[in-house]
Every structure is written in C-alpha cells, then in structure tokens.
Length: 297
Image (cartoon, rainbow, N blue to C red; front, side, top):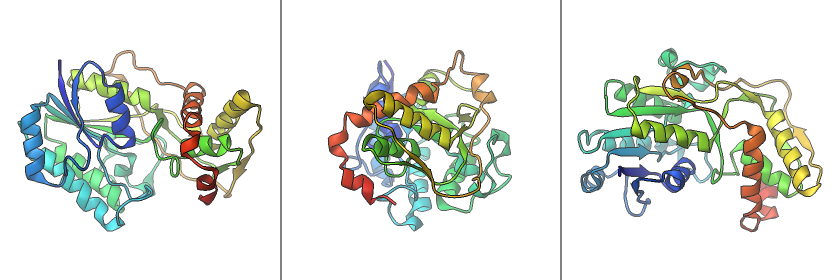
C-alpha cells in the first residue's frame, strides 16, 4: 500500500484528493500541524513519512478572498515549493499543480500548449511563482507539474469561483451574474483526481502536462445549465445577467500530451457535473446565508 503525503488538505483540490484517494495510506497535516515555509519542519515530516509520493496542493493565490497581502504571494509559494524540492531523495516523487497563469494572463488563448512556456513571462506574482516552479523542476525526474486551468467542484470558494457562485446565487433565487461574455476550459474535480491517481501509480514521459478538457465552454452557457438544474430541482426560474459588454480573452489549453499517455481518460461534461455541484451546495444551504450572498458585488 502506497504512502502518500498531501499538503494543503484544507483547500479545494487538496480536500477532494484526500477524500477520494482510497487504497493508500494518506498523511495530510493541516497548517497548524506543519508550516510549509519551515524547511526543517518539512524535512522532518518527509523523513518520518517515507512517502512514495507527495502531492503538493498548498498555494497562495492573490485572487482568493482572505488571501494574505499580495506581496507575499510569490515569496510564500516559492518558500513552500523549495522546502519540498530541497528534500530530494526523501520521497519517491513530487506531484504539484501548476496553472495557466504560467503563460502570462496578458497573452492567454484557448489553446495554450505545454511547449509554449517561456514565450511570455508572467507579470503577476501568482503566475510568476508557478512559472518559476516549472522552470526549477524541468530537469528533476522526481517532479511532475499537473497544470490546471479552470477546475470546479465541491469545497471550492463559492465567493470567487464562477460556477459555484452561480449555483449559490441560483439556489437562493438571485440572478446569476456573468461579468463578461467569455469562454473557459473547466475541468470537473473528480476528473482531476483520476489523473492524479494515474500519475501516483505511473511515471509520465514528461515533467509537465496540461490537465484540461481541451475545449472551452461559454460562461453564459454554464450559467444556463445552472439555471436549468435549479428549475428541474425546485421549479424556480432563475434569471441570468450579463454585466459587461464585449468579450473577454478565452482561457484553456491543449491536452494532446495528457491524452496520449493516460489510457481511457474521459471528462465529465458540465451537463452532468453541474447538477452534482448544485446538490452539494443545496445540502449545505444552512452554512451560506442569503445575506452572505447579497453582500457580493
């Protein structure tokens, strides 16, 4: 039975990985148990755990509500990553999660390819930290970057994540807000966990993979799926408001490399995933008050 260490288990991706990573011995210390910026503490944890694989999901992202001051994003992300990277030999492999922000937000497209990394260097701290991690890990056979673009599912922060916010607003009878017509490549969290499971058990031919569906979905169409799910569930009709004019920049990547190595990989369509996410939020309605939703602008 493989021994797996997981960082950031209280966050969106980490929490889902821990709950679905069955058949393994999993150690997922919280922030109070392990300071990932403390190199000595990280080394001690790794040496005690003797992990076959460490799955590093902890991250600081300046777009998230309750984020520490933006100036700390690059520094903290790098401190955590380097604390793990410096312990080469203390674990079998390190899987971590990059971001489409590595390609520089100012130059996003819907078909970003792994080989394009470095064409543009990110200007924002979050993107720059992820970019720097990828360049540092490029020559390390024990490191793997599973680069995520849009990902959604239970436990994501509904205050800032579009699909979950749409679900929460709709279940309270409020209009769903689309800030601007745009298209994103969104991946259901269960599909990401399946990819993680495969790479825990197998070694890839590359050090980085775009983990995405390879197709963009219009935000308005996603909002409409949420509205339809609510109407089927409760009979309530939900309005959709588009707040801005024009179109934004599409965001997504190619997945040819991933599909070429992970056999039988299938992606859950939003028509199937969104009703599941809505049911998750409806079951927790008491935790999200109407006043909390109305406070968002």
